[in-house]
Amino acid sequence: FLILFPIYSCLLFNQAYAGEGFGYDGGLSFIYQSPNTSALESGSTLSGDFGVYYDFSNISLHSHIEGCTTPAQTTAGHLLPQSNGDAGSALDSRNKGRIQLSEFFMTWHATPETSLSTGMIDATAYMDSSFINNDETTQFISAPLVNNPIIDFPDYALGVVVQHALSDNYFGRILVSSSHGLADNPSRNYSQAFEIGQDHKGMFLDGEVSYTSSSRNLTLGLWTHTAPHESLSDSSKTNLQNYGVYLNAYQSFDQHSFEGRIGYANPEVSSGEVFTSLVYEYQRADWVFGSGYSCTKMSNHITDKGYRDNNQTLEVYLRYRLEDSFDITPSLQYFEHPVYNHDEVQLSNSLWSANLRLSYFF
Image 1 (cartoon, one colour):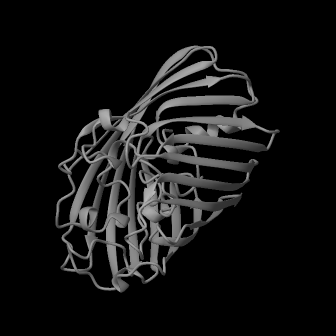
Image 2 (cartoon, rainbow, N blue to C red):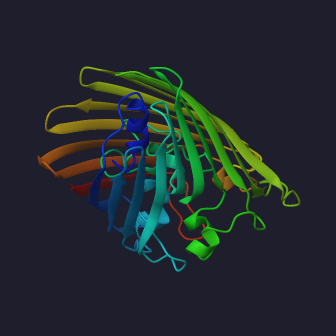
């Protein structure tokens, strides 16, 4: 719900406002990973989410509390971040797991067609949204198959989102937020996250239009990150901006769903220049099969040739519903030229990882 609420809110624009009421939801996610290399030890991560909301006649308040364990320093959850999009989602300045208030915002349904949300928000929950590769607790765990990695999204940040139903099937969204969210500041505290207009800070702006029907979605978006960026090839250029464009397409029929993503970012400051992904989902009453592939074309401006090989990710999973609120999901990942910090570990150009995820929802 926490991820898909913005999508559903768009689909429900033309329905009557809900009545007053209090509600909550949440879940726990345990992920065990076992890579096929001695350079990475097997390890596990645990995370939890708890959301509380209260609806008035045309205003709703939302809060999202999040917590996670500390990823072990020798495991894939720490050394290979792209392998686990759920690892380290709530860390303090010492890179230790913690419990934090990640989101707190108000949504005003100004009309049946228009809503405005403002406060501490998650930009990825509103923009570049996906139906079948946007949630690491139920779908893919590979970070490139959760969000587009070359969009320069801030972490949880102060911002505002306006959503408007242009017609029954066409929607528009505009998001304006601080360029630096909670985890983007050295101290990772709220006082720095609430500072706007400080040195080396700017704005993140994203606008998109989409067509949505019961079985199809098409989204086109443009974004810019105005905080100063340093050129990858010329360290004397320190006041550059990042920007990009993205396109998402989704189609479903019967139990089959397909979705593709493509994006472009400024190659002078973004290590990834072009991103593409294609995912497939087959859904039955008690189980879901998913497979996904992504490729990131690295920027030619990167001077260290060790980071210039194009990164590819492949993942397959089978999610089985044991009970109404409990899922078990074995998965297998393959990485070609994975992206990681070469100063921490040296990995081969290709590696595998066998994984198991246990998810509980309430």
